[in-house]
Length: 124
Image (cartoon, rainbow, N blue to C red):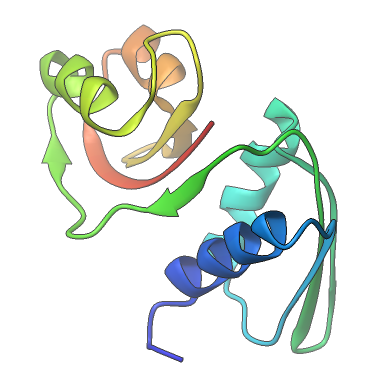
């Protein structure tokens, strides 16, 4: 395992999805990962998640693909469309998760609030 808990957890989620299973058990987690999972749960990509001490159990929802974005690009509001084309299969399918000065949010919310930030992950 690497030092990046977000990338490790999202990779495990995709590996479990490809294996045809629905439940992922992650051994290490962070507050950032829990915030990302909260956004994914709101959008339906994760059905439920529960942190028990050092373990994290994740029930997958309608997830087709997800990954952490490395390196974490710093983007302006006007550049969001460029990264939507790069990481998402279509303009209206999926979300980019952006870390802004007002916290984590989707690219749609960041565009509405006219905020830029750092790209963290994507789901579709």
